Length: 367
Ligand SMILES: [Zn+2]
Ligand SMILES: [Zn+2]
Image 1 (cartoon, helix red, strand yellow):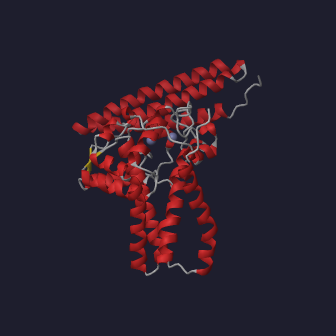
Image 2: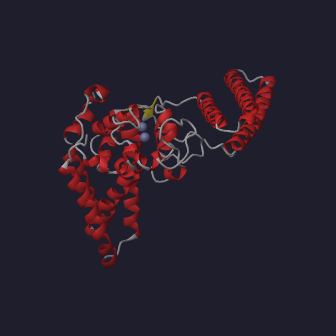
Image 3: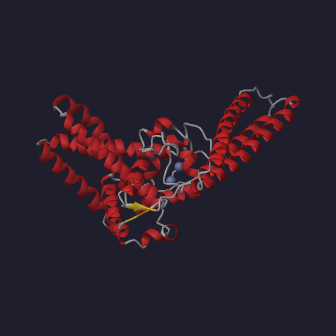
């Protein structure tokens, strides 16, 4: 059954984008914008964007760390500046998304189409907030204050930014177009990409069963939220990109604030569970593929996959135990053993990837 249109929301979202797309070329043609104005626009884009990812998403929706009221208030203020509704409503929809991903209960299910997940879902009348889904947030007076006054907060904070930047740069028109309108537009689409592109384009090393994907390119547009397949499996982890080199500025911000004592109790999934999940998920994929291969090859490949994966899982457990032991006692014999396992794991991992590639590249028999 089709949901009724929310005409207020629809006319605002469509008309502001149309206005911007039509007027922006004229603005760039007739006005001169200083580089500093673009710099301020980018800074505000990051401030509001990180308040959504570190605040609305990883804190209010998933509670991946604890923080103080002052940090909550800052996140709520700059979250309002992002013009994405209240943290309460955002978290409510997002918790529904995680609990019912890809089904009819998912508010922005990708199965209803790319553009539905990206934008069109917001044009429909939203379901009322189910208090049991956000009961923790409803006890938070700052969250409830922001929710109650979200409209004046969203428009007031943006008006304040417009006036402040306009006064500072002596350029009210530039401030309106670059620091406010364009910044809101860009951030809207960056955030919406997570519901559309991060459920369409990429790979699924942690879970094949649902549509969320890991997309490294997307991380640069979403403040690190592109490791979405990982996130849907380990949503309680404050990181989305788990390796140190993964581009995840949201994770770096949370970690930095924790160093200053502003944030604490960062939740992270342990390495062993993550690696185990990677092996088991790949194993399931390979066994599925083998079933579609010519019968003569099947048993041999199944045996190879079974033995390689169980060898690696055992080694991962030993590696993890040794790692824990080494944190308490630093015996030379233990260090030597640790290094040996580490090297052989690296070798096993390489062979495992080779075996996977070999099987996945084989031609299946047509059914
Ligand atoms: Zn998702
Ligand atoms: Zn999430």
